[in-house]
Image: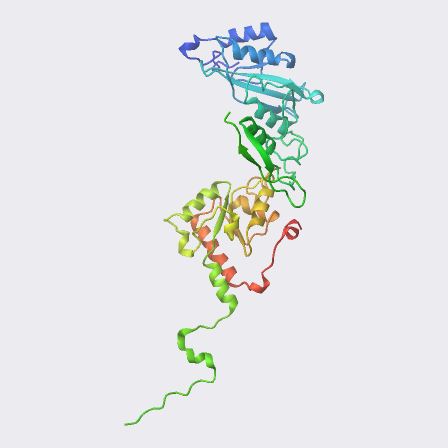
Length: 220
Length: 178
Protein backbone atom coordinates (compact mmCIF):
# COMPACT_ATOMS: atom_id res chain seq x y z
CA UNK A 1 0.00 0.00 0.00
CA UNK A 2 1.48 3.31 -1.00
CA UNK A 3 1.97 6.12 1.46
CA UNK A 4 -0.53 8.30 -0.36
CA UNK A 5 -3.31 5.86 0.36
CA UNK A 6 -5.56 7.11 3.10
CA UNK A 7 -7.26 4.16 4.69
CA UNK A 8 -10.19 6.04 6.17
CA UNK A 9 -13.49 6.14 4.35
CA UNK A 10 -14.58 9.66 3.49
CA UNK A 11 -17.35 10.44 5.92
CA UNK A 12 -19.39 13.29 7.26
CA UNK A 13 -19.52 14.25 10.96
CA UNK A 14 -22.79 12.33 11.01
CA UNK A 15 -20.96 9.14 10.39
CA UNK A 16 -18.66 9.81 13.31
CA UNK A 17 -15.98 8.28 11.14
CA UNK A 18 -15.94 4.56 10.59
CA UNK A 19 -12.33 3.78 9.69
CA UNK A 20 -11.84 1.37 6.88
CA UNK A 21 -9.67 -0.90 8.96
CA UNK A 22 -12.31 -1.20 11.66
CA UNK A 23 -14.98 -1.94 9.08
CA UNK A 24 -12.75 -4.47 7.40
CA UNK A 25 -12.13 -6.17 10.72
CA UNK A 26 -15.87 -6.45 11.36
CA UNK A 27 -16.48 -7.87 7.90
CA UNK A 28 -13.58 -10.27 8.29
CA UNK A 29 -14.94 -11.52 11.58
CA UNK A 30 -18.52 -11.97 10.45
CA UNK A 31 -18.13 -12.91 6.79
CA UNK A 32 -14.46 -13.87 6.38
CA UNK A 33 -14.07 -10.91 4.06
CA UNK A 34 -10.62 -9.92 2.87
CA UNK A 35 -9.42 -6.75 1.26
CA UNK A 36 -9.08 -6.98 -2.51
CA UNK A 37 -5.39 -6.43 -3.34
CA UNK A 38 -6.30 -5.33 -6.87
CA UNK A 39 -8.07 -2.24 -5.59
CA UNK A 40 -5.36 0.23 -4.65
CA UNK A 41 -7.50 3.31 -4.31
CA UNK A 42 -10.76 2.45 -2.57
CA UNK A 43 -12.02 -0.15 -0.19
CA UNK A 44 -13.05 -3.35 -1.92
CA UNK A 45 -13.75 -6.50 0.06
CA UNK A 46 -13.78 -10.00 -1.31
CA UNK A 47 -16.57 -12.16 0.05
CA UNK A 48 -17.41 -15.77 -0.64
CA UNK A 49 -20.54 -16.33 -2.66
CA UNK A 50 -22.32 -18.05 0.21
CA UNK A 51 -21.75 -15.07 2.50
CA UNK A 52 -22.47 -12.42 -0.09
CA UNK A 53 -26.15 -11.77 0.56
CA UNK A 54 -25.71 -11.69 4.31
CA UNK A 55 -22.78 -9.34 3.94
CA UNK A 56 -24.68 -6.96 1.70
CA UNK A 57 -27.68 -7.00 3.99
CA UNK A 58 -25.42 -6.32 6.96
CA UNK A 59 -23.84 -3.34 5.19
CA UNK A 60 -27.26 -2.00 4.27
CA UNK A 61 -28.94 -2.39 7.64
CA UNK A 62 -26.19 -1.75 10.20
CA UNK A 63 -27.05 1.59 11.85
CA UNK A 64 -23.56 3.06 11.73
CA UNK A 65 -22.93 1.96 8.14
CA UNK A 66 -26.23 2.27 6.28
CA UNK A 67 -24.99 1.56 2.76
CA UNK A 68 -28.49 2.10 1.50
CA UNK A 69 -27.73 2.73 -2.15
CA UNK A 70 -26.62 0.10 -4.63
CA UNK A 71 -24.80 1.99 -7.37
CA UNK A 72 -24.31 -0.83 -9.81
CA UNK A 73 -23.98 -4.55 -10.33
CA UNK A 74 -21.12 -5.11 -12.68
CA UNK A 75 -19.28 -8.13 -13.98
CA UNK A 76 -15.58 -8.60 -14.54
CA UNK A 77 -13.96 -11.14 -16.84
CA UNK A 78 -10.43 -11.95 -15.69
CA UNK A 79 -9.64 -14.11 -18.71
CA UNK A 80 -6.00 -13.43 -19.63
CA UNK A 81 -5.71 -10.85 -16.86
CA UNK A 82 -1.99 -10.59 -16.01
CA UNK A 83 -1.10 -12.65 -12.99
CA UNK A 84 -4.66 -13.72 -12.32
CA UNK A 85 -5.36 -17.19 -10.98
CA UNK A 86 -8.56 -18.71 -9.76
CA UNK A 87 -12.13 -18.00 -10.73
CA UNK A 88 -12.59 -16.34 -14.08
CA UNK A 89 -15.43 -13.94 -13.32
CA UNK A 90 -16.24 -11.50 -10.57
CA UNK A 91 -19.38 -9.57 -9.69
CA UNK A 92 -19.00 -6.25 -7.93
CA UNK A 93 -21.51 -4.37 -5.84
CA UNK A 94 -20.46 -0.74 -5.28
CA UNK A 95 -22.41 0.62 -2.34
CA UNK A 96 -22.93 4.13 -1.10
CA UNK A 97 -24.45 5.50 2.05
CA UNK A 98 -26.69 8.46 1.32
CA UNK A 99 -26.65 9.30 5.03
CA UNK A 100 -22.93 9.09 5.71
CA UNK A 101 -21.63 9.46 2.16
CA UNK A 102 -19.11 6.70 2.46
CA UNK A 103 -18.59 3.96 -0.06
CA UNK A 104 -17.50 0.37 -0.25
CA UNK A 105 -17.32 -2.23 -2.97
CA UNK A 106 -18.18 -5.85 -2.38
CA UNK A 107 -16.74 -8.34 -4.81
CA UNK A 108 -17.58 -11.97 -5.36
CA UNK A 109 -15.46 -14.29 -7.46
CA UNK A 110 -17.48 -16.57 -9.73
CA UNK A 111 -16.16 -19.70 -11.35
CA UNK A 112 -16.79 -20.25 -15.03
CA UNK A 113 -18.19 -23.74 -14.51
CA UNK A 114 -20.63 -22.63 -11.83
CA UNK A 115 -21.50 -19.19 -13.07
CA UNK A 116 -24.18 -18.37 -10.53
CA UNK A 117 -24.64 -15.66 -7.91
CA UNK A 118 -27.65 -15.17 -5.65
CA UNK A 119 -29.83 -12.28 -6.70
CA UNK A 120 -30.20 -9.23 -4.47
CA UNK A 121 -33.21 -7.74 -6.25
CA UNK A 122 -35.15 -7.99 -3.01
CA UNK A 123 -32.55 -5.94 -1.12
CA UNK A 124 -32.31 -3.15 -3.68
CA UNK A 125 -34.91 -2.67 -6.40
CA UNK A 126 -32.33 -1.35 -8.82
CA UNK A 127 -30.56 -4.70 -8.76
CA UNK A 128 -33.34 -6.05 -10.97
CA UNK A 129 -32.15 -4.33 -14.13
CA UNK A 130 -28.47 -4.24 -13.15
CA UNK A 131 -28.43 -7.99 -12.76
CA UNK A 132 -30.21 -8.45 -16.05
CA UNK A 133 -27.56 -6.32 -17.71
CA UNK A 134 -24.73 -8.28 -16.10
CA UNK A 135 -26.31 -11.54 -17.15
CA UNK A 136 -26.79 -10.21 -20.66
CA UNK A 137 -23.22 -9.04 -21.07
CA UNK A 138 -21.29 -11.66 -19.07
CA UNK A 139 -23.56 -14.67 -18.79
CA UNK A 140 -23.49 -14.70 -15.02
CA UNK A 141 -26.72 -16.18 -13.73
CA UNK A 142 -28.41 -14.46 -10.80
CA UNK A 143 -30.26 -17.19 -8.97
CA UNK A 144 -33.69 -16.15 -7.75
CA UNK A 145 -34.08 -13.26 -10.18
CA UNK A 146 -37.74 -12.95 -11.19
CA UNK A 147 -37.20 -12.06 -14.85
CA UNK A 148 -33.67 -12.79 -15.98
CA UNK A 149 -33.81 -11.84 -19.64
CA UNK A 150 -31.57 -9.69 -21.78
CA UNK A 151 -31.61 -5.98 -21.13
CA UNK A 152 -29.26 -4.33 -23.64
CA UNK A 153 -28.88 -6.90 -26.38
CA UNK A 154 -31.80 -8.15 -28.40
CA UNK A 155 -33.61 -11.41 -27.89
CA UNK A 156 -32.05 -13.12 -30.91
CA UNK A 157 -28.53 -12.44 -29.65
CA UNK A 158 -26.48 -15.47 -28.72
CA UNK A 159 -23.47 -15.29 -26.47
CA UNK A 160 -22.37 -12.62 -24.04
CA UNK A 161 -20.50 -9.79 -25.73
CA UNK A 162 -18.45 -8.43 -22.84
CA UNK A 163 -16.79 -11.78 -22.24
CA UNK A 164 -13.20 -11.51 -23.31
CA UNK A 165 -13.54 -14.48 -25.64
CA UNK A 166 -16.46 -12.96 -27.55
CA UNK A 167 -15.15 -11.59 -30.86
CA UNK A 168 -16.09 -7.98 -30.29
CA UNK A 169 -16.81 -7.21 -33.94
CA UNK A 170 -19.11 -10.18 -34.41
CA UNK A 171 -22.44 -8.62 -35.27
CA UNK A 172 -25.77 -10.31 -34.84
CA UNK A 173 -28.79 -9.12 -36.74
CA UNK A 174 -32.25 -8.86 -35.30
CA UNK A 175 -35.09 -9.86 -37.60
CA UNK A 176 -38.14 -9.13 -35.46
CA UNK A 177 -38.69 -6.18 -33.19
CA UNK A 178 -38.02 -6.82 -29.53
CA UNK A 179 -41.11 -5.56 -27.72
CA UNK A 180 -41.12 -5.06 -23.99
CA UNK A 181 -44.85 -5.48 -23.74
CA UNK A 182 -44.65 -8.12 -21.06
CA UNK A 183 -43.30 -5.68 -18.52
CA UNK A 184 -45.39 -2.78 -19.74
CA UNK A 185 -48.57 -4.84 -19.49
CA UNK A 186 -47.68 -6.08 -16.04
CA UNK A 187 -47.13 -2.55 -14.80
CA UNK A 188 -50.34 -1.26 -16.36
CA UNK A 189 -52.36 -4.13 -14.98
CA UNK A 190 -50.84 -3.49 -11.56
CA UNK A 191 -52.08 0.07 -11.82
CA UNK A 192 -55.62 -1.02 -12.54
CA UNK A 193 -55.69 -1.11 -16.34
CA UNK A 194 -57.29 -3.93 -18.28
CA UNK A 195 -55.78 -5.35 -21.45
CA UNK A 196 -58.43 -5.07 -24.14
CA UNK A 197 -56.53 -6.05 -27.24
CA UNK A 198 -52.97 -6.74 -28.21
CA UNK A 199 -52.04 -4.50 -31.11
CA UNK A 200 -51.13 -5.33 -34.65
CA UNK A 201 -48.86 -8.15 -35.59
CA UNK A 202 -45.87 -8.31 -37.85
CA UNK A 203 -47.07 -9.64 -41.21
CA UNK A 204 -44.09 -11.88 -41.68
CA UNK A 205 -43.67 -13.47 -38.31
CA UNK A 206 -46.86 -12.92 -36.38
CA UNK A 207 -44.99 -11.35 -33.50
CA UNK A 208 -46.70 -8.53 -31.68
CA UNK A 209 -45.10 -5.28 -32.73
CA UNK A 210 -47.28 -2.76 -30.94
CA UNK A 211 -48.16 -2.22 -27.35
CA UNK A 212 -51.42 -3.54 -26.11
CA UNK A 213 -54.46 -1.30 -25.94
CA UNK A 214 -55.59 -0.81 -22.38
CA UNK A 215 -58.45 0.85 -20.63
CA UNK A 216 -58.17 2.40 -17.21
CA UNK A 217 -59.87 0.37 -14.56
CA UNK A 218 -60.60 1.31 -11.00
CA UNK A 219 -58.24 3.92 -9.61
CA UNK A 220 -55.58 2.05 -7.70
CA UNK B 1 -51.24 56.02 -93.71
CA UNK B 2 -50.26 52.45 -93.98
CA UNK B 3 -51.51 49.77 -91.76
CA UNK B 4 -49.62 46.64 -91.15
CA UNK B 5 -51.73 43.52 -91.18
CA UNK B 6 -51.84 41.66 -87.93
CA UNK B 7 -49.80 38.47 -88.01
CA UNK B 8 -51.63 35.47 -89.24
CA UNK B 9 -52.84 33.17 -86.47
CA UNK B 10 -50.47 30.27 -86.04
CA UNK B 11 -51.49 26.87 -87.16
CA UNK B 12 -50.89 25.35 -83.73
CA UNK B 13 -53.95 26.27 -81.70
CA UNK B 14 -52.17 26.33 -78.30
CA UNK B 15 -50.00 29.19 -79.46
CA UNK B 16 -53.07 31.41 -79.60
CA UNK B 17 -53.19 31.32 -75.86
CA UNK B 18 -50.17 33.53 -75.43
CA UNK B 19 -48.55 33.23 -72.01
CA UNK B 20 -51.61 31.87 -70.30
CA UNK B 21 -50.16 28.36 -70.52
CA UNK B 22 -46.73 26.89 -70.23
CA UNK B 23 -46.06 23.57 -71.80
CA UNK B 24 -43.53 21.29 -70.23
CA UNK B 25 -42.88 17.67 -69.40
CA UNK B 26 -44.91 16.01 -66.68
CA UNK B 27 -41.72 14.79 -64.99
CA UNK B 28 -40.45 18.32 -64.69
CA UNK B 29 -43.61 19.60 -63.05
CA UNK B 30 -44.01 16.71 -60.64
CA UNK B 31 -40.35 16.73 -59.69
CA UNK B 32 -40.43 20.48 -59.20
CA UNK B 33 -43.28 20.09 -56.75
CA UNK B 34 -41.72 17.15 -54.96
CA UNK B 35 -38.24 18.54 -54.53
CA UNK B 36 -39.37 21.90 -53.23
CA UNK B 37 -41.78 20.61 -50.61
CA UNK B 38 -39.90 17.86 -48.84
CA UNK B 39 -41.43 16.93 -45.52
CA UNK B 40 -38.66 15.53 -43.35
CA UNK B 41 -39.09 12.92 -40.69
CA UNK B 42 -36.08 13.13 -38.38
CA UNK B 43 -35.07 9.70 -37.07
CA UNK B 44 -32.80 11.24 -34.48
CA UNK B 45 -30.97 8.98 -32.06
CA UNK B 46 -27.81 10.89 -31.21
CA UNK B 47 -25.89 14.16 -31.50
CA UNK B 48 -26.56 14.50 -35.25
CA UNK B 49 -30.19 15.14 -34.30
CA UNK B 50 -29.11 18.05 -32.10
CA UNK B 51 -27.29 19.46 -35.13
CA UNK B 52 -30.46 19.01 -37.16
CA UNK B 53 -32.29 21.27 -34.71
CA UNK B 54 -29.90 24.02 -35.75
CA UNK B 55 -30.62 23.29 -39.39
CA UNK B 56 -34.32 23.77 -38.84
CA UNK B 57 -33.95 26.88 -36.71
CA UNK B 58 -33.66 30.42 -37.96
CA UNK B 59 -29.88 30.69 -38.16
CA UNK B 60 -29.56 28.16 -40.97
CA UNK B 61 -33.25 27.89 -41.85
CA UNK B 62 -34.02 24.80 -43.85
CA UNK B 63 -37.26 26.46 -44.97
CA UNK B 64 -35.25 28.41 -47.54
CA UNK B 65 -35.23 25.11 -49.41
CA UNK B 66 -38.83 24.20 -48.75
CA UNK B 67 -38.10 21.37 -46.34
CA UNK B 68 -39.06 22.99 -43.06
CA UNK B 69 -42.24 21.08 -42.33
CA UNK B 70 -40.75 18.51 -39.98
CA UNK B 71 -43.23 15.77 -39.21
CA UNK B 72 -42.98 13.31 -36.40
CA UNK B 73 -45.15 10.72 -38.07
CA UNK B 74 -43.66 8.71 -40.94
CA UNK B 75 -47.05 8.65 -42.61
CA UNK B 76 -46.90 12.41 -43.16
CA UNK B 77 -43.31 12.60 -44.37
CA UNK B 78 -41.44 11.78 -47.55
CA UNK B 79 -37.86 12.41 -46.43
CA UNK B 80 -36.37 10.38 -43.64
CA UNK B 81 -33.29 11.91 -42.07
CA UNK B 82 -31.44 9.33 -40.00
CA UNK B 83 -29.42 11.39 -37.56
CA UNK B 84 -27.55 9.20 -35.15
CA UNK B 85 -26.32 5.77 -34.21
CA UNK B 86 -28.54 2.80 -35.02
CA UNK B 87 -28.09 -0.46 -33.12
CA UNK B 88 -29.21 -3.86 -34.29
CA UNK B 89 -31.88 -3.76 -31.64
CA UNK B 90 -33.19 -0.56 -33.22
CA UNK B 91 -32.89 -1.72 -36.84
CA UNK B 92 -36.31 -3.46 -37.14
CA UNK B 93 -37.97 -0.34 -35.73
CA UNK B 94 -36.19 1.80 -38.29
CA UNK B 95 -37.17 -0.53 -41.11
CA UNK B 96 -40.79 -0.59 -40.01
CA UNK B 97 -40.85 3.19 -39.75
CA UNK B 98 -39.45 3.42 -43.25
CA UNK B 99 -42.07 1.03 -44.55
CA UNK B 100 -44.79 3.22 -43.05
CA UNK B 101 -43.73 6.19 -45.17
CA UNK B 102 -45.72 6.71 -48.36
CA UNK B 103 -44.11 6.60 -51.80
CA UNK B 104 -42.28 8.50 -53.09
CA UNK B 105 -39.77 8.69 -50.26
CA UNK B 106 -36.13 9.47 -49.82
CA UNK B 107 -33.56 8.87 -47.11
CA UNK B 108 -30.64 10.95 -45.94
CA UNK B 109 -28.09 9.22 -43.73
CA UNK B 110 -26.57 12.00 -41.64
CA UNK B 111 -23.22 11.69 -39.96
CA UNK B 112 -20.58 9.04 -39.44
CA UNK B 113 -22.77 6.58 -37.53
CA UNK B 114 -25.66 6.50 -39.96
CA UNK B 115 -23.38 6.22 -42.98
CA UNK B 116 -20.88 3.69 -41.68
CA UNK B 117 -21.37 2.95 -37.99
CA UNK B 118 -18.75 5.56 -37.19
CA UNK B 119 -16.27 4.61 -34.53
CA UNK B 120 -18.68 2.04 -33.08
CA UNK B 121 -16.92 -0.89 -34.69
CA UNK B 122 -18.56 -3.35 -32.32
CA UNK B 123 -21.08 -6.10 -31.81
CA UNK B 124 -24.17 -3.94 -31.44
CA UNK B 125 -24.00 -1.10 -33.99
CA UNK B 126 -25.23 -1.34 -37.55
CA UNK B 127 -22.31 -0.39 -39.81
CA UNK B 128 -24.25 1.91 -42.07
CA UNK B 129 -27.96 2.37 -42.61
CA UNK B 130 -27.88 0.91 -46.10
CA UNK B 131 -27.77 -2.49 -44.43
CA UNK B 132 -31.35 -1.87 -43.36
CA UNK B 133 -33.01 0.54 -45.80
CA UNK B 134 -31.98 2.20 -49.09
CA UNK B 135 -30.20 5.53 -48.67
CA UNK B 136 -30.15 8.38 -51.19
CA UNK B 137 -27.70 10.87 -49.73
CA UNK B 138 -24.88 10.36 -47.22
CA UNK B 139 -23.56 13.22 -45.12
CA UNK B 140 -20.08 13.03 -43.66
CA UNK B 141 -19.25 14.53 -40.28
CA UNK B 142 -19.40 13.71 -36.62
CA UNK B 143 -21.77 15.43 -36.35
CA UNK B 144 -22.16 17.21 -39.71
CA UNK B 145 -22.26 20.99 -39.82
CA UNK B 146 -25.68 22.47 -40.64
CA UNK B 147 -24.29 23.59 -43.99
CA UNK B 148 -23.68 19.93 -44.77
CA UNK B 149 -27.33 19.16 -44.09
CA UNK B 150 -28.35 21.95 -46.44
CA UNK B 151 -25.94 20.69 -49.07
CA UNK B 152 -27.54 17.26 -48.72
CA UNK B 153 -30.99 18.77 -49.24
CA UNK B 154 -29.74 20.54 -52.35
CA UNK B 155 -28.15 17.38 -53.71
CA UNK B 156 -31.33 15.46 -53.02
CA UNK B 157 -33.31 18.13 -54.85
CA UNK B 158 -31.03 17.69 -57.84
CA UNK B 159 -31.50 13.97 -57.65
CA UNK B 160 -35.29 14.26 -57.44
CA UNK B 161 -35.20 16.69 -60.36
CA UNK B 162 -33.66 13.98 -62.52
CA UNK B 163 -36.14 11.30 -61.57
CA UNK B 164 -38.72 10.01 -63.98
CA UNK B 165 -42.02 9.36 -62.26
CA UNK B 166 -42.76 6.33 -64.43
CA UNK B 167 -39.58 4.72 -63.17
CA UNK B 168 -40.26 5.27 -59.52
CA UNK B 169 -39.86 1.89 -57.92
CA UNK B 170 -41.85 0.59 -55.06
CA UNK B 171 -39.38 -0.71 -52.53
CA UNK B 172 -41.15 -3.24 -50.42
CA UNK B 173 -40.21 -5.73 -47.79
CA UNK B 174 -38.72 -8.14 -50.34
CA UNK B 175 -36.33 -5.56 -51.69
CA UNK B 176 -35.33 -4.48 -48.20
CA UNK B 177 -34.67 -8.03 -47.10
CA UNK B 178 -32.65 -8.91 -50.18
